[in-house]
Every structure is written in structure tokens, then in C-alpha cells.
Length: 452
Image 1 (cartoon, rainbow, N blue to C red):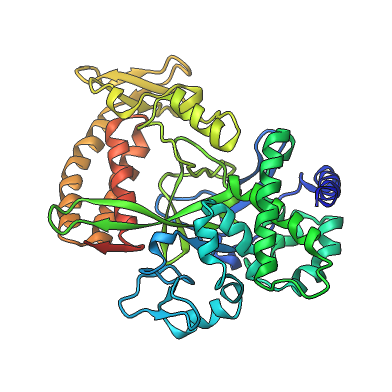
Image 2 (cartoon, rainbow, N blue to C red; image 1 turned 90 degrees about the vertical axis):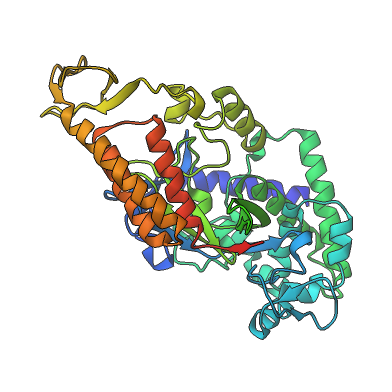
């Protein structure tokens, strides 16, 4: 198992040297907006960028998971196949561990992964292993041994990233080369992962995944080990919105995990450009900022600048994802929401020549023509003050529409507000944070939700 993995490392390293400088072609056919492309550099690795300007509110991506797994506590309330809640669930014909929402979902599951997992699911749950461990096994059990046997030579020899673009999300090669940080792993870490891979491969063996010859045990075990490593950094939480009937409060609840081959290529920022929600276990991604052509399109791995201090964010990202965050909020040490100044306004320089400088003006300033210290041009801040005034009325309308349950109309109003603010002002400031958060809350209404 170890020798096989080392051979894989050598081949993939060779592949990276030869091919990772290339950009991708249009992949909109897979649910990716054709304004998005992928690029590579040695510092950031593979990342998403804008092929052309992307406007606020654009749908960036819709993607089904290559593999997804429900948490045990939701296995009797949600469909094991699609993650949707079911008021009239169908059971597995051979166990009482899972439910399905339809005959179609049950047939899909029992003809693939559940025919192997049916007898070992309790064992996996009782073992105390994480959801990533379960997914590492399911990536294998949702295919046949024959599938991986026929793919073995190509996996060992390596292949170009570009060769995977036309493959369906169900193809194992879509996830095979996701980042694993194998060069950063200690011997202890690698040993622990190898022990878990051996346990999971034994689970596959007792579930009759292997044929009688059992010649591929080490090969499959090596793939399980690889799965464990890339899942550590690339799994996304799948959640649903739970709304209270009594006080109308809401919260997102983690119901399972999924590996999304395209979404996994988006890098992190503490001020993300996109927000995601889920319908079943399909992920929907929308932009919550204007993104210029050539600009990076960032998502968020957990820590947000407006909620978490910089030291906490960096520590969390380094601990879980093994990288040092150098996004703009971290580089410029943006304040958290509670520490944002309310007695000053941040205007964009609006001179005739392009300038990225921000003009920080006291809120009681009486002047209306402000000179930029970077470019020497003057900005008329009356335009910005008028935009702020206009957003106050729009905000009241948007909140009323949201409270009435008119979420689409509310969403459009918040988009209008954010466009006005973004045109004349520069984050971080509270109104911008509030509006982005309201946009996210509107979008979440489109996804998984339940009132309790």
C-alpha cells in the first residue's frame, strides 16, 4: 500500500512539473458559469478566477457531489441518496439503518454503495470514525472493483488536470488529484491515516467488495488512503436551514458532508466573493461581490473577517487546512464588525484616472470635494452620500419583504443596495457587512430548510 502511494506521488509530481501552468477551457456545460476559469501558480496552487467581469448575484456554479455522506443522526429523517427530508420514507429492504425518499433513490443506492454498506454501516458508526472516513470508503463502494481495476494503469501513470474537465462529476479522476499536502505530513500523521485506511479496506472486504482472489487489496487500500488525505482539505459541510416557528429565528445545521470536484478548486478568503447553499446535496454558488475580469474568485473555509479576529482566523486555517492566509482582510488587518468605526465613511477614489485608493472621511465632514493623497485627483463625495441616503429606504423595503416571506423580491432589493454601496464605498464597513449577510439569508431560503 505504501509503495503504491509513493509511485503515485512520483508520477503526480512529474505531471505537475509538465502541465500545471495551463489554463482551463470553458466548462459551463458542467454547471460552471462560463465567466469562470481555473489557473495555477506555485503559491496559490489551482484557483478560480474571472474570465470576464462577474456581477453581484450571478450564479457561479451548480454541482452534484462526487460522493456525499449523511451524519448518523440524520439517517432516519433524510434520504441517504439525495439528503432530502422525507415525510413518507422508504426503508432499505435489508436493514433499518437508512431511509430513502423515493424508489428511484433507493434503487440508486442499493445498486451501488449501499449493497456493500448495508451490513457494515453500524460498524462504521460505532467505530467512532469521522464522516471523512465514511466518505473515503463510500468513494470506493459507490463504484465496483472492476471500475477501479480498469482505471489502475492511468491512475498510476498520471494524467493532466485538463484531461478531467470533460469528465462527469462521478468519475474518480475528478477527485484523484485534489490537494493532500502529502509533503507536509509527519510520519505519525501518515501512520494514523494508514491504520484507518487499512480498517476501512477491511470493512470493504467483509462487505464482499473484493472477489475471491483478493489481489487488489493493497491497491484499493492505497486509494482509500489517498481519499482520506484529500478529503481532509476538500470536504464541504452540507447543511439545512432550521427555522423556529415560535420566534422566527433560524440557524444552519450540519447534516452531512460532500466532495465537490469543481468547488474544491476555489481558494479561501476571509472576505469571500461567493456564498453557497444546498438543495438536497447539490451545491448552488452565487456571487456576493463584483469581480473584475482576471480577479480571483474566493470562497470561505470557515473564518470570516467580520466575526473572527485575525489571529484566530490564521490559527484556525493553519490548524485545519495547513496554510497561511494572505487574503486582503488579513494583509490589511481589517477590523471585526464590532470594531468597525461608525464615525467615518470609506469612499472610493472617483477621479478621472483609475485609482484604487480609499478616502476615509469623518462622518461630520462639511467638505464635498476631497483630494486623494495617492493620485491627487478630487472626488465629489455628494454622490456617495446620496447613495447612502437611497440605501436607507431600500433597506426598509427589503426587510419588510423578507419578513413577509417574499424572499426573491427582498433579495433583489438587497442586490440593489449592495450595488449602490459597492459603486462609491469600499469595505470594511458595517452597512456593507449587513447587506451581504442579508443577501446570504435570502439565498439560504432557496435551499434545504425546515420549520420546527
